[in-house]
Image 1 (cartoon, rainbow, N blue to C red):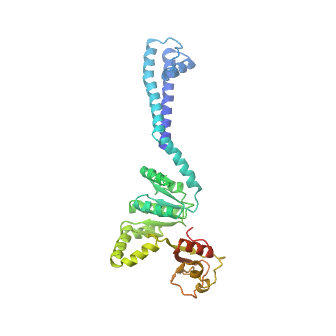
Image 2 (image 1 turned 180 degrees about the vertical axis):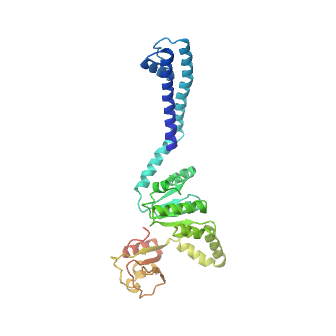
Image 3 (image 1 turned 180 degrees about the horizontal axis):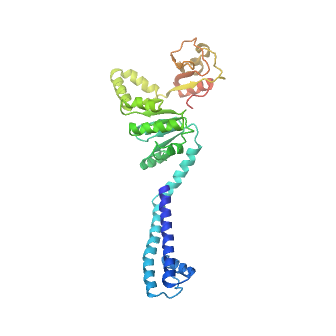
Length: 338
């Protein structure tokens, strides 16, 4: 938008300059009054066709010819720029960006995806499938076209700059995924985001093996290597195909609608102080509790025993169909990630 504004101001300034030069020129050459000189200049460059105020001298006629060439050329260039601005889609693009800005300004507790390449686009599809509020940040103008087609709000710019991150609502966001094309770029994104929002959950993409530790030191809570994960996945498919197929199903990649969800227990939750056995989650909801992360130690109690007590701040990880997870949510409260 700033580029279009600068272009418009340049055209306007050029027209004003031609008017000033014409007015001063007639006053100097013909000794006309300011109003007569201004009138003659405007009628000349805008080719209105009214009669001359005074009959110009030979020098005045030569000056008029120069003014016509320069003035009319400037006017035609300005008209051409306006037509290109409207017909070329820049005007609609400007309005679209203003609409997106209003959408982003209304977001709160949302997620930011920095980089809309293959990894970022895959994350966006998952977020959209789970009705998660998010916004994409990318410097590539082509991303705007792809994201618009998918109905995704995009903030165009360098995700490593404070201005762009603030435009994406980083101070109100719940989490940020840094998936730009280079490890150095992700490093700058993580550093900037951590400074702007110290409590932000940050997940970063790492390409090189030695980049993971650096990204964590920069402020990333979790670092993911797509190549490492891909290698482990391929090895599992080869060595343990049945286990791999099962994990594909329970993590949402298969045809069955199984979900793995996490829930945080608040102090006023009705299940606080009760045991897994008395809660009888399996019978009442159909879901299965896989693990409990203890609030006091952060340690995972995997496959918790029936006499395990649930305490305020504990997090439950459960698996089930969407209907079963929904019934569990009604029993113990909202998932921690929503």
